[in-house]
Image (cartoon, rainbow, N blue to C red; front, side):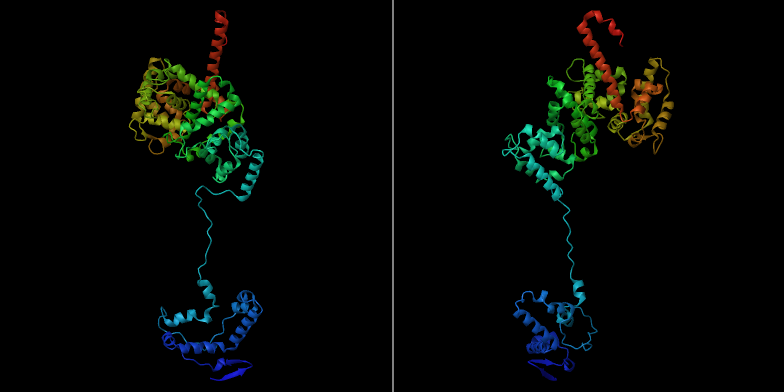
Length: 540
């Protein structure tokens, strides 16, 4: 080998360097070979310049940053480390399989491969996946949280010991955006130690750290009402908010002198909520059912509306008055229970005995009454809502189960005939022209329009027709059947004028007017004596 000296550095001419391929076994058995190769690599001109640059950087105090910021580092990033073999003189690879070959392993770890672009590609790319599951729900954005804390700080200024219950309502309505009659329920949810006050730290811990701030309104209400050991709402969970509504709403102030009617009003509202919202009928209102219904909108409406009777959904006092008076009329012994003979009088004896028997067999709904053969007030609320609003899905399900005698989910002509036979007999007794069942069946099929078989009607068919309520009236309610046949033009025009009102809304409005007129008449009779008895005939 031809060695020449340049200044102080001894270098080896790459063109004259000719080495035979050396195996890894030979390197292990002869360490001197590796040292000789390393010394020859150091003698290359490029290696000398690299080492000299690193030494200069170290003298300048940039040793820690030499490989990052020095010009030499940039050269390393863009160029290969000086190779021991001249260009084009690298020994060819073995034609044998390279898997596990010592030569292959040697090439992978050789200095000449450090700058290969294949090395960058072969390194695994670590992609940061953002967190998508949060145990208590996704936390609120920082700007929302900061704005909320700013509002809280302003509310708690001067209240080091916290806010008392009467001071907490503004927090509930203006900060939390909840109905104002949730104030007491929220207060007690935070004041777990019954200290009588809620501090700023307690409120932030519950509403912000508990992630209530990021929840939607339905979930917030559900969380406040729900007991911690349950995953659903029961009827008793609504009583605290209804008590506060009764004590604070201007449209219900007149009831404060009659606590017994306050209790009945609250019960009626709760029964109506579960009738429409708890579609499973198990008395356990889930968050999904709460979100699917219109209760939240009704709560917000009643919180803003001073006239309670304008809130037709759930909270109308007139609706409660009609339901309670209807129950009181049938409960002749006033033991707060109704039996078969009482219910048969409903609607001026409009129902058939067979349908009343089906109701008391508890097929459409199991009674909550503990007395055998009698329904209590809650059972009656479900009945009257189903009877007077056959356009709603709970009502259609209620009466479908009554007519479905074998419980197979299909109404057959024989089952419908079983109920219509009594209607036919009643029409004959009343000297009404009877309508044969064959004609009625054709009319029912036309009204329902079954999807599969014209002789069989499913619950899906019933829910898909707007005339299904009239079909049930044909089968077991004679008065409504006759009214449907006569088609009162006044009622038809009334329905078209206000389509937003349901059948129940119109019925409750008519009955409230009738009941209030009867009560006014009784009051006038009691106050004026017998002198006014004849004149009372005139207004009616």
